[in-house]
Image (tube, rainbow, N blue to C red; front, side, top):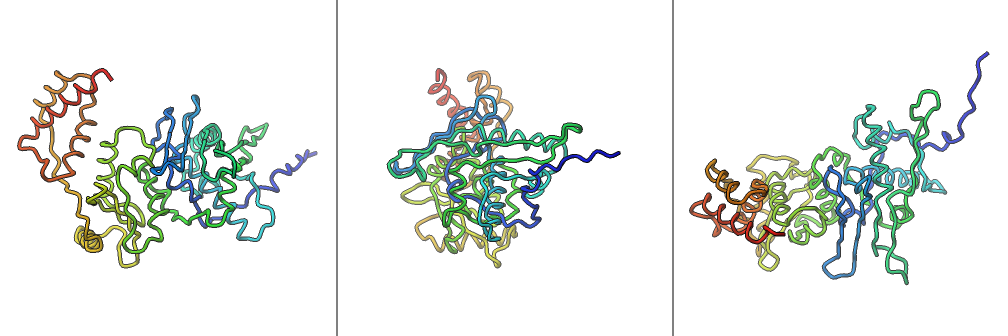
Length: 370
């Protein structure tokens, strides 16, 4: 006699898989520093205040789990897209708790579905639940701020016999859920976003989609110091600037063209322009030059940021620097030095090796005891 297992009523609530789910991102999380941009465990908090002092964001990592990353945010994109899709279907009650199959979620966000990925999914859910955010964005009248985690809780329903997952559940925070339902709270994104591998590139895509998505042909320009503050990135501004310059020169961000400019009043800036049908995704060097010329003609007060050819350190210079200034990451400081040189053609030294040695001597003198 076969014993029939009772049907778990939980399965009746599971969100059906939609292979071509229209993707939506929560607008307010796209331009502020809410996530770590590195895959390594981050324990340093993010503390951001807008230039006018009106908006602040503080993100506190958990000592065990670390801070939620820009890749963990893919789960929130899936959740926002799922709730929005239910709304478009005319559902009267939109749930804050979503029941789903891990396989379906992983497929939607472009991840492999092997056993290792299920464990990584659990770790991501743990970071989303453990990371604490404090902000005055959408704080109710009379209150200074709101504190929340991205998800209130999550559950993995495991079969007692096989120890395999029968499905998972997550409950969105009230703050994030409200952002999904508010008018204009979501922006559409392309599924190609999930193929972007770099943390800075992922974050830049979201910033570009937020600001340049509907800004017309001229696009949107933002100064690099402001962009640095909005990123919440660890490390120095010089290193950040060097990395943004590299990303802009490669100009491979899906859907958007990036170009560097020197604005008379703001210094180096990044311009983001949405690509149109007559602007190829990844054109030839000639087509990219034409696009840059067009952007410059539309911005007569700006000029392209100078970019000198890269210089290599000789073995002799490396040996001298490591002997006289031990303990520093020479190549990281070289990136900062090259970034500073790239700001102006007038900064190009007659002797690169001697100039870098002088830069290291000055850096060591200022920071040796820091």
